[in-house]
Length: 203
Image (cartoon, rainbow, N blue to C red; front, top):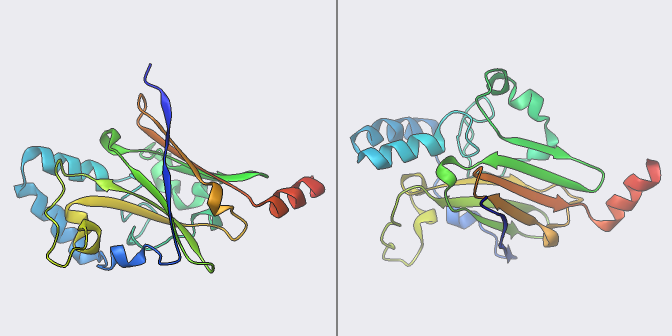
């Protein structure tokens, strides 16, 4: 059976990662993109539809209305039963998140079992977890200014979901795992020591 393996979680502290996603994905842009992939190679078209399709962690419509997945979303401020109600009724998503006394977690199937990068970025005011990767078989050539694919029309090459961490999350200890058999990504974020102790004291 394929193992459940750990994924290295990179940290980009101070300079943040937001400039990498400097080009916003708008709803009309996304609609045009979906129409255009019909003329792509069959493999590319199928890959894009799987990655951005209904119920996917990387779909701009995951939360019921259009939301750029490159914008940090305060996931743990909401209940999945509420945001994903329509998708769950039809069993059309595997995305799930929750909070326990000691940690926050996020689980989701990754379309096609694609390789994902997990990174914690931001500054002292806000930390963000980035889950990103490429849906095309080969990365695009680097632009002349040296920026990578994430700084341009990133959705034509890759995917992302950026999630804002709660204030009591210990961003230094974020863990990520991938199950190669089920294609399942799991991210665990422990709460800070003070928050955990406070929860235990009131239990």
